[in-house]
Image (cartoon, rainbow, N blue to C red; front, side):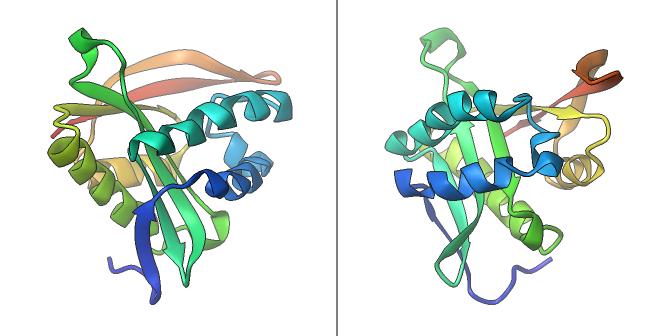
Length: 166
């Protein structure tokens, strides 16, 4: 799949926070992340966007406007510094257009060739069909499935732990 015309990728900058905040303010998008409300989003965003200072976060743009952010959450401890968790979010208006796949490919390259990581991993809720499709297409494998990990109101969802060796 090719990206839309005008698509480019750059390192994330702190000013991209406004876009991340906007995307996570959507209930549909927030559903796929561990944060449950605006207070938790407000607490998480500085940590997420803060990884920009190590150039381990990439922003996908269309005509210079951010439409996606993918971040490697680097580990600070030597014993586990060979792998990382990551998050990837795409503006709902730009999903299913190849942007997530392109950003994932570039995140994997950054992780392997710049940070010399050996593995990336991610938690995905069982109902995130698009996310799971992207991960499988990008070479990720299911490691384990934990039933009733997420609780939203009276609904429980399984967490699927996925990883890829680089």
